[in-house]
Image 1: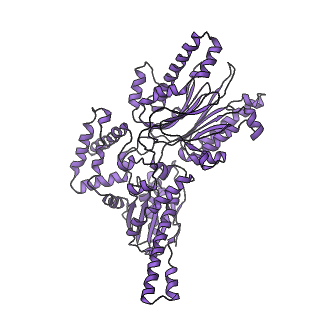
Image 2: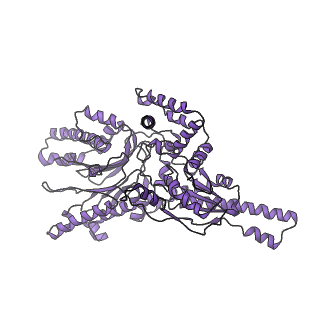
Image 3: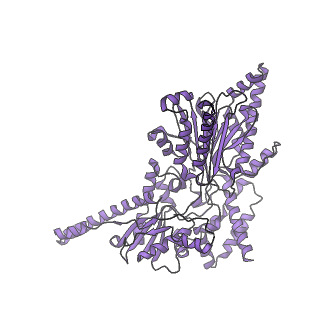
Length: 625
């Protein structure tokens, strides 16, 4: 329902055979480039602000380009960058160049889809980033799906080494840090091979052959605090993808004798290469998939595993629902809501219509329906047993029982996309109320209406559009259901959920504190957060939890319903959220829940949540002044 900008998408491809092999078997030397395009289109849901690709050719003679990059911004960025790449290829072919010599026709590829999570935009912030050097083994392309919580610490560490980063942004800083590590690895090998008597190109080739990317990653990564999948290609052809020790951000890979491929989602690889479920492997936390320039691939353990903090919101909302496990998990999320939903409608199934908010809540809707149907079956059995006991077990009475159905309708239709070029706020707000349309006549006036959504984070669309437009169907009661728990805390690992004041759960808790004469709690939380400024980062606690602790989940949900109900709504509104406990039952292998519970998996998380509250509090006070 609400667009949540979130972590980016990554893709990497390493061709293990000569380009002529792919020409003969698949009909084109562009096999790698075409597969990269397919993967990125399948991951388009992960980044619609910008996109970029990189390519490295192997064994190119001195004086010829071997690293290529193309980047673009906007919703059509994928189309633009691949169109430009193909245009460059066609131009070179028309000038008499061999296909294998053309730009973007190489053996190693990288792709990136971007959602900005830091507020920074512009082509300079679009991945992949490039480091240039006259030594092939010191060149590097870098992209990633990550946010670091300790950018200042990493920045200071490279300043202490004498480096001078051009910009203060995590990707630039990582490029500089990894570049420094790459230089140290080159210097180690230079000393070895120079002492062995090698010089000129023989020395350069020996360094390119023996470069060990694992050494670079082990040198640089211990200071990293955050959620990340960081991908790189060295100019010599070495390739890597590394995942954070807690597994916060996702990464999957496939390898055979023709290709090695990495992507942010498993079904993307399955679809692009027509693979079975078990063919695609998950990159384990703290590990790196490394492909050397000779095509040898391996999994190296770079950092020890931390606690399992694989992102549950990834499963609820972000990733494609076509993944085998995610599909099952989203259905289970719906089933886990059956009893609170039935309670909300006073178990009156006959006068209730069930529906969903298109489009991402559809799978959870199926799970909710299955659970309600099971409840109805048990109810029918009891009714028939009662008829038998009372002597009223007639064909007509049995038929009346069996006719009872769970009523389901598609009551909401996502109709238009709000055009941002309309500047007048009054017109924009009016359009926002019409993003969804309704199916008239889909419910009877006076019925209950249950609609399930994947998440209710900010509630903006719910208040401006959905409740208003569904109220036109004249339900007696409207139950809005969230398949995820209440989002109470900011994310700092790559999801655009960073501003405390935007969360409807936070607004509800703050309203409850003020209504009940507990404003002192707000001031005390601010004081505790400020007092931690000088503490070592491993001693910082998340005191923002105290904002919620006086209230039950049900109290917060009731206040959310009150805040989101437009003043002219006729139906009674109730909001039902998934519980954290049931969410973990539905998604057992991805327990990362810091946005729901405030239990951050890295020490940097507590510092940033306190900072977010301080920013909110101080902005709130200054606004009053």
